[in-house]
Length: 89
Length: 190
Image (cartoon, rainbow over all chains, first blue to last red; front, side, top):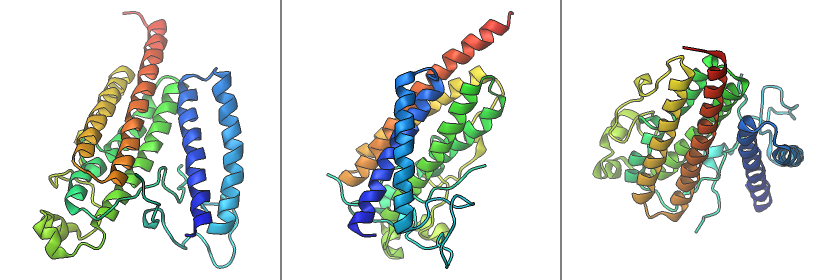
């Protein structure tokens, strides 16, 4: 995975984290306008970012989420546990 | 149904292999307060919840726990990477190597395999949600113990993320419990 691909992946992880957090908040605060607006914004941005990543790095989801180029791209690595992320600290 | 996403919820890095830490950490994979138990507990309890919000919270947190299970597996996988058998034996992982090699097996830090006896599913929403609140606190405490056991800044970062998630889940379960109690109180008289 090159630097550009890593940046795209980290960006998706950040956006999806926002979506998860807002999702859980909305489960217990379904009438919160501000949270809902943020959730919808993040969801749109996340869809665009995922499409761009998948075009370069292969599919994030299977089971009919998207079409595949030849040969079947799903089985190509790296798998999530094989990725070397930049060190923290 | 569930759809797999081929990415981690949070980036996992470790500074160096550390088999002893892998042995401690595996308890959050298959130990009494680990992520497997959390996921199975919440995803089993959701069917008998009385409100849409409670079904949603248990489905969503249960699903997030599966993502945490993958994060823990990745940490353990990286901590064991490239460690030869004799080194595993020296560091107290001879049992791990003889039974599981470098594989990820749901067990606690002492090698006790995962059991459904770790979870409670009573069919009573108040009892189940109280169990969930306690489970989140026990998982938070375990993460704090694990953070104290390592000086690897990369690993600590990932563990801190997981610890924070337990705090958030506790908050959401608390709100859910209050709502469910109000809902049941409005319907029932004893």
